[in-house]
Image 1 (cartoon, rainbow, N blue to C red):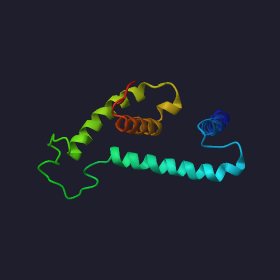
Image 2: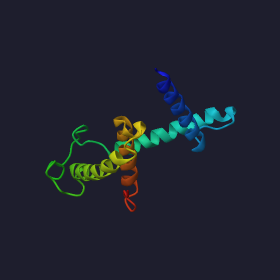
Image 3: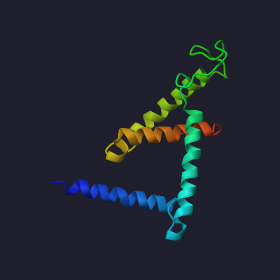
Image 4: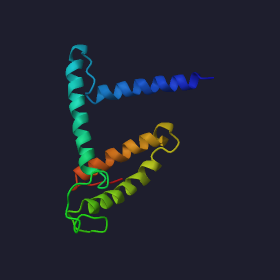
Length: 135
């Protein structure tokens, strides 16, 4: 029977709407919805810029650089490659924890949701280096 799948989708939609409201992204007053959507779009754009800043692949965006400093073997602190490998180590640590997060729950076991959590936690840790990532 498809009933359990239908119920799961319905609960997911309700949970999603409830979280949007609790986080202030969905107002109770429908007349404020347009303003809220503008705010949510601005926050999404800001997050996208943070992802591009912190999680970019040096190979994907080659620019004119000093190849003595900025190459995959360089350990120079200003090397995009050096930062890329440091971020990779951080992401490996985060991914270990994300994979253990509610392993029996289909939502958290989903590869797409694990990638979203990995990206979110990585960006947060890189944006807050004094705190970094803690389990």
